[in-house]
Amino acid sequence: MIKKALFPGSFDPFTIGHEEIVRRALPLFDEIIIGIGINTSKKGLFELKERKVMIEELFTDTDKVKVDTFSGLTVSFCELINAQYILRGLRTAADFEYERTIAQLNQAMHPNLETILMLSQPQYSMISSTIVREILRFDGDIKPFVPENIYRHIMDRQNNKS
Image (cartoon, rainbow, N blue to C red; front, side, top):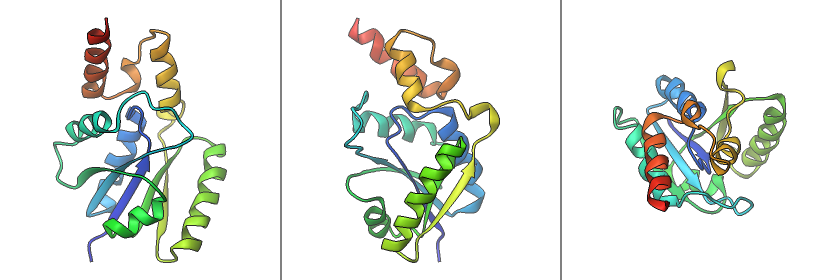
């Protein structure tokens, strides 16, 4: 049986912290699907298609990572793609409390679905997409917080707006 994990999130934008979690998880799974979900409580900075293209470009070096978009419940998407695992990154203790609750609810709805929580490396624990968007809104330098190809996409987009 293929070990397939879903790494869900809004990824607006995908950060070096997200990349680090996926790359560290590669040896654990046969396939990791990065699922870009529509978060109804967040106003997106980048269109879904744009996020998908940026993330796909980042992982052209491995055939174990796929990128897709979804709406609705994460467990429903897991069923659709036959994922047995949900992969999530933890930056803080607050993240743990939130992720534990979600994992328990997901397992109640889908008993065969396991959530794997990976601790972020300390140097990435302060990075979040929300913070990166805020830095970008105020014309700060986001280069240290996003992968190079995503930085280029963002800068190209910013330059085309001018």
